[in-house]
Length: 164
Image (cartoon, rainbow, N blue to C red; front, side, top):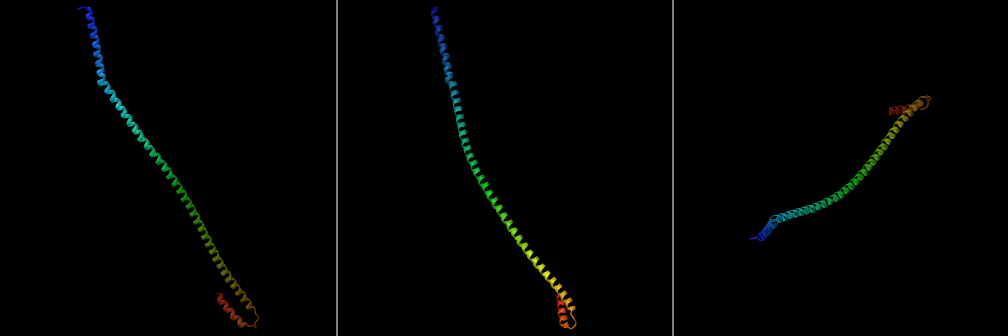
């Protein structure tokens, strides 16, 4: 067997070894690496799907929250308007009560003033009568003795009894 034969055998044996090595690499790639890559891809796709689902869910929650905020703002405006109306009604009621109380106090003061006037008039009348009686008594005592002295004395006595 000659050297060329051994060279061909060596060449073909290296070629077969290389082909066997390549076949093992392809087999290992197809058997182990490709399923791992596919599994990783599926996990990442699942993660992306879950992230998108979570994002959509959060967007829906944000929209719900925005609607609730808008509704809360409407309610706050309604409460604010109701508070302003209540404050205005309370203001008007307080003013009306104060006016009514002022008018009542004025009426009471007018009544007290009228009672004071009546009391002062009665007091003045009594004092005027008392002074008139005193003046009449003095005038009657200064009359001359012959002029209806008896009649005057009885009138003076009755007036003194009434004044006292």
